[in-house]
Image 1 (tube, rainbow, N blue to C red):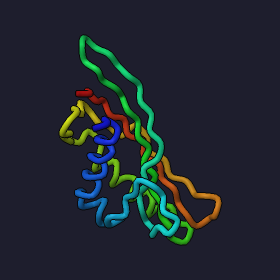
Image 2: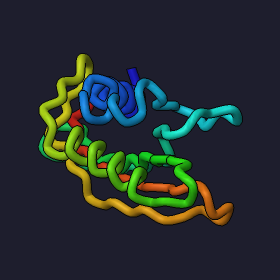
Image 3: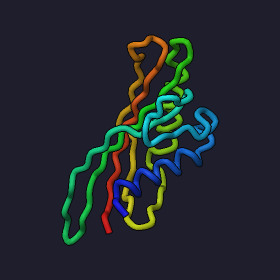
Image 4: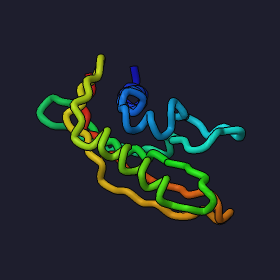
Length: 134
C-alpha cells in the first residue's frame, strides 16, 4: 500500500473517531470536494513529500493540507472551531499504520479566511508527518 494512501486513511480515521471533530462536521470528511457537499465539512487538499534516506531506512516527510469549510452567514468563528478541533485531534497524535510506520505527526500551520463569495469560511490545516516506508 502506498505510504501516502495509508497516511490519508489514518488521518481520516483519526478525524472520524474524534468526538469534537465529529460533533462539528459529523462524517462529512471527503477525499474530493463534491459539488453538492453539505457544510460544514473537511476535504483533503494537496500533499507533498520529501524523501529521506537514513542508514538503510527509506523515509519521508509528507505534508498534507486539510481544508475546512463552513457556511454560517459570513461568520468565521464556526470554521475556527473546526480548525482547532482538527488540530487537537492530529497534533502529536499516537496513530498506528498497518504497513508503514508513522514516526511523528504534527500540525505545523492553521489559517482561516473568507472565500470571495462572502459567505463561505475556509480553513487550512497543514499537517506534517515523518514516515518510515516498509
